[in-house]
Image 1 (tube, rainbow, N blue to C red):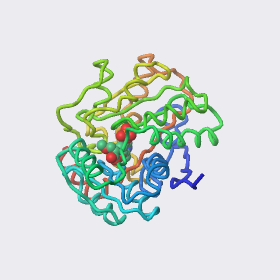
Image 2 (spheres, protein in one colour):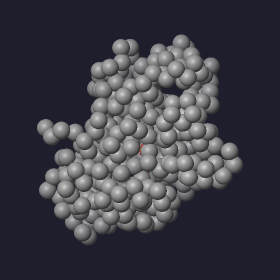
Image 3 (tube, rainbow, N blue to C red):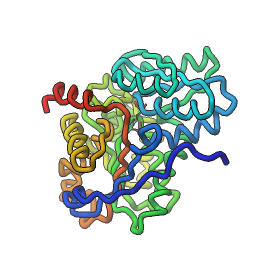
Image 4 (cartoon, rainbow, N blue to C red):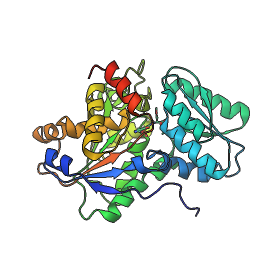
Length: 320
Ligand code: PLV
């Protein structure tokens, strides 16, 4: 088998988060992947299977799937077209171009960009790279859990992650099943206004949001993938769906920068906010998470849509 494009990322114990939560907190540092997020695990795997003889790949993205596709395509010497919505910050567009990709800006939200990517795949004969809805992506993402299993001495008490279209969630669940950790609950975080998974769980069916009103644009799929919804219904693994506000996600990004010296984007801040806003404690008080909890595994999904300028822009916009 070809060598994967992703790295085995560090698993760091966070002293400050451990103090806050009262249980050991381990950070899986996916921000240190070559493309800046976990996306390279799934997209690298998918492209190795589907894009070997491709005349080019086309990926619709809120940013990070595109960064992964552009990186992988460059390594495979295949041209990449990344279709992003107009809500994507200029800094991401520039970073995609720096990876050698052609950037196509279409529509207002990811769903619009995806329609264009599918059209281009059809008319130009390009290989379509989906950002979250494909079994090969989930299989690739599942490696994040097998890596943890190989280095963490104790089974985690819970896994904390963010949900956009649900690809990371599906991959983590597959990984938990692969290593036999099916009794480990997953805390699935979204922001208000990018909450397609929570909406589906509440409604008991797939729901398409009218619009994406959150600044966490990389969580901004209007409909979660069917497989993620099915996992929420099957009960094989307990999934706790929770929301935070954009303000809480942004404040988590800032605290994480101060305490862990790492800058991540809003999509990742949504997961981190569960620690900083006291949500984990609340879930324990409500009996929805065990107390005491074993080690809390946080998937630090990373993200390229953040720099100091974007951070101050968001602070101004969200009045934090
Ligand atoms: N972002 C996708 C989908 O956007 C993208 O195109 O990049 N954390 C970060 C930093 C992300 O970029 C994403 C997804 C997620 C979490 C959520 O992952 P998912 O979509 O697999 O649930 C619209």
